[in-house]
Length: 124
Image (cartoon, rainbow, N blue to C red; front, side, top):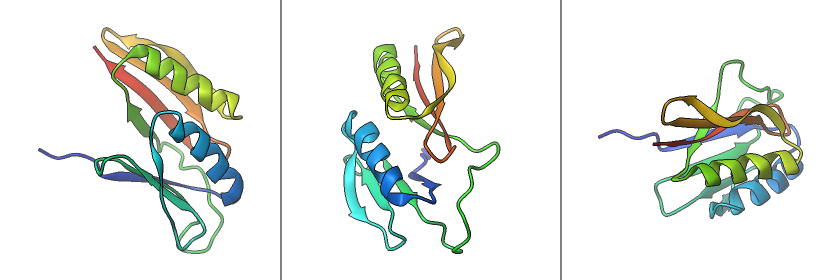
C-alpha cells in the first residue's frame, strides 16, 4: 500500500500564514510539530499526516501552483463543512462550496491567504 506522506505550500508572509494554519489545522487536531529553517512551520498528527507552510527553498517568491491542490480527508460531511467554513472565517477564499460532486464523493474547495488551493472531502 502507498500513501502520500506530506504536502507543503509556500508563503511570502509566513507569520500570517502560520496564524491561518495554526487556527485552521488546530480546529481538526493537526498541531505544530516544529519550526522549519525557512521560517515556516511543520504540522502533523500521529505520524501519518504532515503538512508544512514554508518559504521557498530557492529564495524566490512563493506563488500558488496553477493546477496544484492539497486535500484533507474527513470521516463525515459535517467535518468537511466545518473545515471549509473555518477556512473562510479565517480569510480564505471559496473555490467550491461543500457538496456532492458525484454520488458518494463530497468535496469542498478553498484558497488560503497566499492563493494555495486546498480541498476537504469525505467519501461515502
